[in-house]
Length: 414
Image (tube, rainbow, N blue to C red; front, side, top):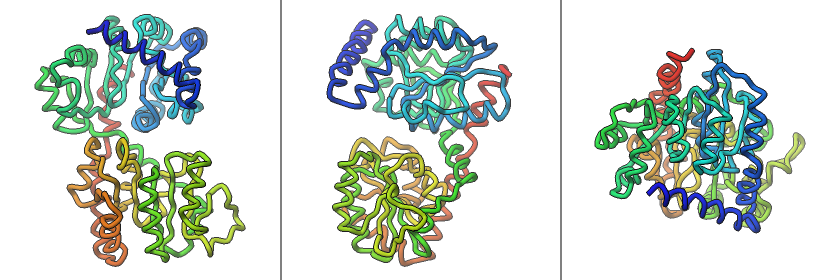
């Protein structure tokens, strides 16, 4: 089975190399790994760390889960170097200059040779994998060297490969981890079926991350000037299907200001959205301190890095992605006590299910459902306040995963 896995890795890297001829993201993935091992060896050979932590994340979302752990290590002044690796170019390209870590790399493809050379070069005292990254050769190498390895903010579901008849090598990989920090009790139950009792319900570190963002919220003058005294509806990480519903909602609610933050901000996508808005939209990058917004109802945020802050100006929120692979980050909106809507594909996201159960969020599949959710929240201040309070209580009770994880991992390593 392991031979089949290694063959699959080789096939994947070959496919990416071919796709790189025409696909931008594939090109970044492929080119970012050219000479990568040699670069890692050279850059780390000049360092002489007493203790080094390797943290691996898939992409930007998982980095946001790792970030509270990184920040807590620095806050506590734990004497250690931190090396972060990314699988995805979308995460790496945005965070490659992050100042609180010592080195950031792409993760070399998971071949046995790469795993040995990478771990030789990094020489980690501790390894932390975030949420669901299970690279079998890296995990086997860590286990063979008896390096303390942890899985943080993980979540397991019955349909996962670990619980399938053909998932033996994946189940075996879980034995690498000294402790598995999971988000919920269901994950504990499922892992116990496999014989693992080194499991701690710590929760999701993203709650700590969004709480820190809210606490240190910045002012965005352009947003404030655009909204003025009106109420605002913020839609984050939207895709085409989401935007079709949102433009219709804006049409039916001309007294509300809409801020739409597309997940993809390429020129073609932004232009299509502008055209759909019929002259009522302006892009963030076109605005200045002297811009007049009287004729604009919709602001399109065609830049990166502001969404989590912009939610603080909202009265309601919509989270994109639910008509595609799955919804994006709902917690960035919930931390501000916002009633939230999103598309139908949310069931892989524990926090989304919990927020629906406590009345904070609503899944919608049609414009009619979106409008029926929004209209009462627009007109009934008491109803809105109930949802607002429920969202605040939900996020508040889930804060604290980072402290638990840090104490467990670093209590004996400080």
